[in-house]
Length: 116
Length: 112
Image (cartoon, rainbow over all chains, first blue to last red; front, top):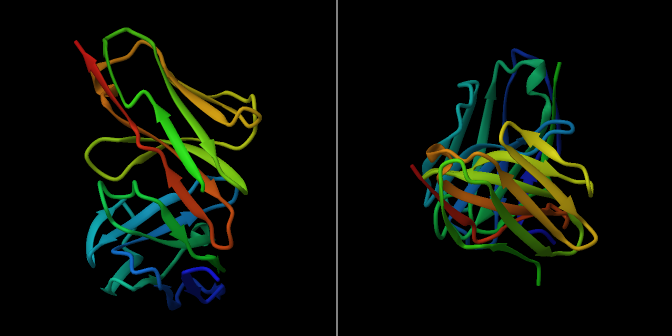
């Protein structure tokens, strides 16, 4: 069983909707990440949280809003998305040692998002 | 145990030199190999490699993957001082949710 869970697994939303993606890790890690994976493209790092503090925001549009209430939970709030935001959104966690994003990251199964 | 090993760990060259960075891996359920450049912040993506023998190029940088011998190289030609950074190799593993395993990195310093 994976130590990182994501809900929902699939989401279809209109451009005016507001929805949230949830990620939970059971590995005792201190760092959590949001990635976007579009078809045939590599992972795009969106946000990094280390010890609940946001340490990276890779020029992500404000229609994506992350929230990390504690080191086990990470949310991605979605508002007025565009069709090009349709993708697989992956959450990951890692121990958090060293420079951000360089220790082994464990991924959740992802949320397949479709924006109509 | 899955692992990714990079060599050399550090390298000092002069502007205009050509460098080759190495990455070898031992993983199960390989999905892709990625190269990143890191300059004091989270890594920035350079290349993703999934097929053997197909060179990826971006300006002075190029990379190739050998899935039989389980390694990849990153070449930088005509190096510039702006190329100074840590270059990270990571292997994406399919394992339920997936796993991204980073190598230790190669610290490249380009002197004027």
